[in-house]
Image (cartoon, rainbow, N blue to C red; front, side, top):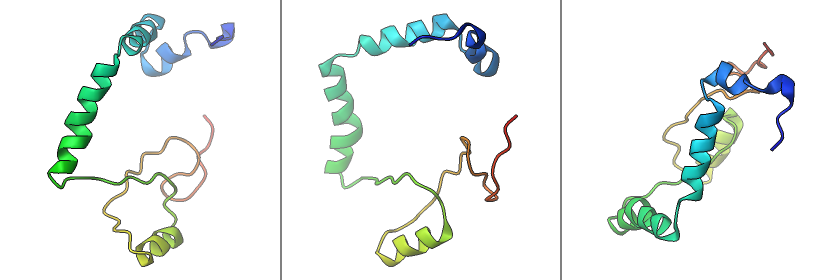
Length: 98
């Protein structure tokens, strides 16, 4: 990925992540093996499923009419994670660019 000169350092400024941090994370991702993925899959997906533990996650907006429709279709809505990543604010108003 090419980073424009005027954007260099923004990740460090905004989030505290340096270029070295990203380089290290990239190396860690590249070092993951098939056996690592199989082990994690067994531990966090397969074994809990065998014990009757499971989760379903749906990503989407939180419009009341959608929640009502999904509830009417038999979905059990337990909680929302309302982390605002941009776009609509929790109060339904658009976020302002800073």
